[in-house]
Amino acid sequence: MKKVEFFVLFLVLFGGFLVRLYRFDSPILDWHSWRQADTSAVSRNFIKYGFDIFHPRFDDLSNVASGLDNPQGYRFVEFPIYNFAQAGLYKIFGNFTLEEWGRLVSIFSSLLASFFLYLLVKKYQSKFAGISSMFFFLFIPYSIYYSRTILPDMSMTMAVLGGIYFFDRWLSTKNFQFSIFNFQFLFAVIFTAGALLLKPYALFFTLPMIYLALRHFGFSLIKKWQLLVFLVLSLAPLVFWRIWIIQFPEGIPVTAWLFNEGNIRFKGAYFYWIFADRISRLILGYWGIVLLMMGFMFRIKKESYLFFLSFAVSSLSYLAIIARGNVQHDYYQILILPSICMFLGIGSEFILKRSKEYFNTTASVLIFVISATFMLAFGWYNVRDYFNINNPSLIVAGNAVDRLTPKNAKIIAPYDGDTSFLYQTNRQGWASFEKDISEMIEMGAEYLVLASPTPKDYDTGKTYRIISSQKEYLLFSLKEEP
Image (cartoon, rainbow, N blue to C red):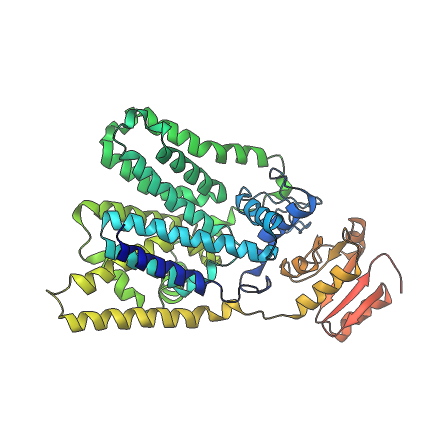
């Protein structure tokens, strides 16, 4: 790697790191705080109860997620690789809070993801397109926000790209017959298996691997036992994990709705939310569509066209099959960011280096500068409120519960089923009145905390003793009468 290239990469990566430190120490009460709280709660309970990765637990004991009462607080979704890293780093090094370590795991995952993206685009298109793709991945405001949230999605995206990169390197090994004994094969398996364990949605992005195998071996790939070994080793951990969690149905959230609840797939609302709102407005800030479309339409290397197309098809397949999930939650689009940034990078290369037959140099530079600047500016306008803490009373109330109740107390912290408030209490319990209070007391509820109480909320003090009262909260003991 030449010195100039290394210097540019360092600047882009360092800049990407710095912008991700914005509100680094914020509590988990920003956008999509409920999902972040659930993730971080698993990590926090590793600290409290030990690193039992085969029995991950979070704070919610309710039946909201799975439809079944969950008295142990089991949380069987992704295999807790992310949580193990977050809690492990906190346990070993301290220095930062547990939440900050979670943000750091996501931040460094995004930096590594951008580097893998650069390496892939550099090989199959050009160095300039690779650096441009990396730049957009690191500086699109949507990516900045979700690269510092406590979610496994960015780590999964990084592992997907790492798996594809090392798989490509492995296929290019000269002595492929004995290649399962080299580090390219090992890392390809580790990253691919890790991606699938972090979230099985990574399966959609095995299409680029299938294309690469076809490119190297044609249909004779079915005769390559090495590929079978790779497939088995990559899929086996996910299969074993899925078999294991069947024993704990109360800890498995209902997921069937993610595919097509409400029969929304390919309806007008689907196309609006996915393509007009999420991709066009939120990610591309409208103006990025210019670069994206030029990346699709112009000057992809002929021998690389199917490689990039495989990413586009993988992304579209993911959006179509997990239709309701992508409409419901904007963080689901994290997985398609690399595909978008690939075409942004290729479009940037076309405008700045290969468009002389269409535009003069000045026009080309103006098109790029205006499109890129407005994309980032409007992207920031759309994402900036994601960082805000809109209900600071939850922090005050949570701190009061943590200070005034036993560490093993069970809490009702109603917040319309949103576990963000419950997380602030540092206790297990319930995030809604899923049953009558008397029934919940029988289930183990010992305290009730209400945030931003209204005058009517004080009526509960006629039945249960008020332990502490402030304008931000009311804390009741459910075991004591007034």
